[in-house]
Image (cartoon, rainbow, N blue to C red; front, side):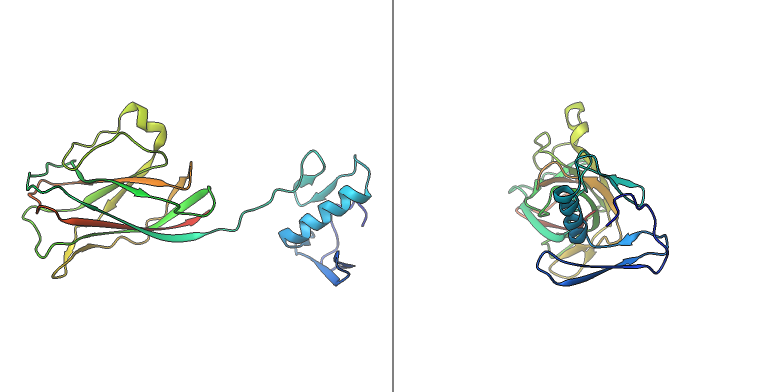
Length: 227
């Protein structure tokens, strides 16, 4: 392969063989560039490294590939749905607007790769057979690192030390009464974020005052995809 080729005529096909001797054909896209998989690109890069001198460069589209600027290895997007539940204390102390509900939700190993992500949905359920008077919508506050500790019924505060850890806030719709369960379904969120580790941390806060039931379980399920 000529290392100085920048563009090829549309429709051109270049034939060769894989390392195992299997015939291989590369196609040229409408833009005039080779259309190959990441695996193929890595094989090409390795072949160049082995057979061309150290100063050889090959241009793919607008990306110059060389020893000093190797082909980036893209990670395959991953998706996952994770559920975490917390149980509130054995009391019926009334919530004020902005109070933390249940404490910290810790989502461990949400994606196999630490990367940028899109939050697709966040479904919040309360294992209660009746809807408390005054209960309205909620908010889910996402952090990429462990934030300041707040217990159930504490007033939520995004303190200065937590600002670099904060990813964003997602509104959770007022739950529907489904008999033995209060259910808040929230799809199509598409909140972008960047992970620091494999874990995410979430506080759910109230948007209105109401009196909760003792020892009620609250469950949050998040679905996200690596980007």
